[in-house]
Length: 386
Image 1 (cartoon, rainbow, N blue to C red):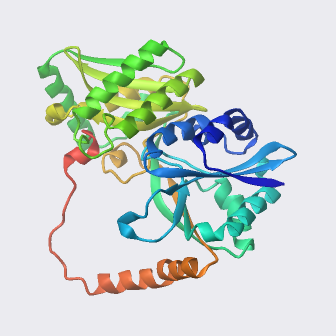
Image 2 (image 1 turned 30 degrees about the vertical axis):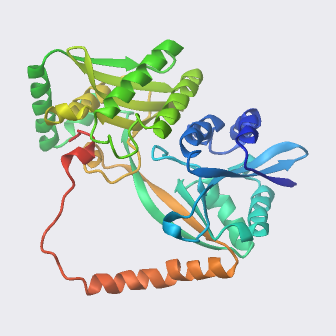
Image 3 (image 1 turned 60 degrees about the vertical axis):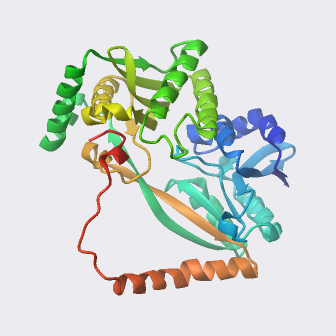
């Protein structure tokens, strides 16, 4: 078994065919684990991070990948050296890729991390599903190599069951939600003609994709997210969505919904379709139309249509946004594994995060003076949805 570290973008690009071959041999063939997804994410993260991708080869064949990055500079002047998965805010799932879940490949990856222990203090493996390779195979190898690891449930990914009919599903929704959706429809109707366009999977040309991305960018520029650094008019997110849209279109998995009023686009949702599942990655709306809730109306119309197709689940993305749980009670846990280096720095950090920090937080909460006031998020944090 041969291990090597990929740090140069050209080496990463050259891995595409071997990576996707390994992906097809892996137990988890999520679209979020393809080289195309990580390549799109790199278009964003290359501005502030460095590649740190561990690869294992057996007889010249790629059999294992741990897709990590590291920050170019320490945050706030801290000397802590951390490695993280190559992710973006739109990531819903991440994992190591190991051919056939082979234990010796996991052992080789863990051993290489130990050998390079002077290069890092902590590794954060986020967006892990319960059945992920990291939790079921790699974690054991890490612990067998005397690495301290901590696992937490860090979020949940809500989803809607699309196996039944729309009528039955909608009948189970609350009166409050239905009332809000009817109100949104009436307000939008008063503004003019409402149209909904769908660039469906396996349809459209590259020019259609280019035009759709331009529309998405325009809506994002006018959304409440403008100025946060995550709107699509920023160079990183724009490079990410542009690369992802074209690669997804090539795979036949691109899905883009747009709501227009009098021909002007005011709301959108960018999705990927994979193995019968629909993944909502990004939704935005023109803030000037916020009171009319165009995002809510688009969600209802979009869901009603995709219920008619042979899809299994609609994933809303990790996050505790209130509007998501008005649509569903179903969700999958999302885990984070923290791995601490077998060094003095890594051991000190493990002691703080695993033992001391929880105690300090508990004592702080015990003696905290109650404010007597509950602060709720602004409606804009729900992307114009109800």
